[in-house]
Image (cartoon, rainbow, N blue to C red):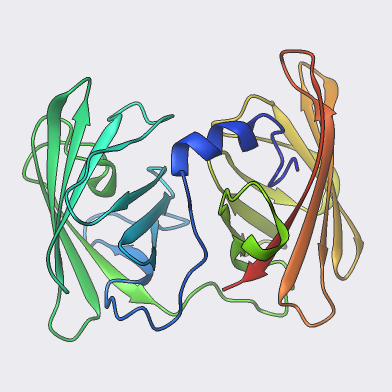
Length: 278
C-alpha cells in the first residue's frame, strides 16, 4: 500500500524492522502502554514529538515520531533484538526492572552506544527517560549523554470527525504473513493529515504533491474520494511508482489499504492489508 502499504518494498523491510509489531492487548497491565507527547519548557515543536508504546505478552513495541523517528519491537527480558533501518543502533536489549521502570541498551555493531533509563511517575502521567552513552538514544533525540526528557501521557489521537485519524494495528486474523504492522494518522491542524510509519509526511487531501521523509519515493498526492476513501499516488523522479487507496469501514473501526506499484528492483507489487483502530 503506498501510504501505508505505501512504499511497496517497505512492507518487506518492516517485517525485519519490527518483527511482530503485534496487535495491542487492551488491559495488558503495563502502565507504560499509551500515547505520550514530549514536554519541554525550553523547546516548542510543531507538531510535538510523539511516543506510542504498545505491548503483547512479553514484547513491547515503540513508535516515535516528530523531530526524531524510530520504530522497534523487543522482549522485556533482556534478550538481544535486531533492529534495522535505524542509523543510531542495530540491536536493542530491554530489561523490565518493575512495572514502572525499564532500562534499554542500544548497540551498534556489537558495541553499546546508549543506555536509557525509563521511569514512570507514581501518578502514571509522566514518563522520564534519562540517557547515557555517546548515542544518547532515539527516545532522547539521539543527542548528548545525560540528557533527560519528560513525556506527558496523552489521550490518543484526536479524531475530530476524521475517520482516518488514529493509531491503526494490522488485523492479524486477516493475514497469513503475521507482520503485525502499525501506523499512525493524525490531523495536521490545517485540513490535512500527518502520516507516520517508517516513512513520514504531512499532506492535504487536495490532489497536490507533498514531499516524503525517509522514503524511497519523492512525493505523495492525496485525493479525498468520499468521506471514507482516500486515493494516494506516489512519485519518484517525477514518475508515478505506486497507487494506493485507503477505505475506512462505516463503523470507523477498520481500514483496508490496497497498493499497486513497481519496486526499484523492477518487481511489480500488489497487496491488501486490513487494520483495526486502537
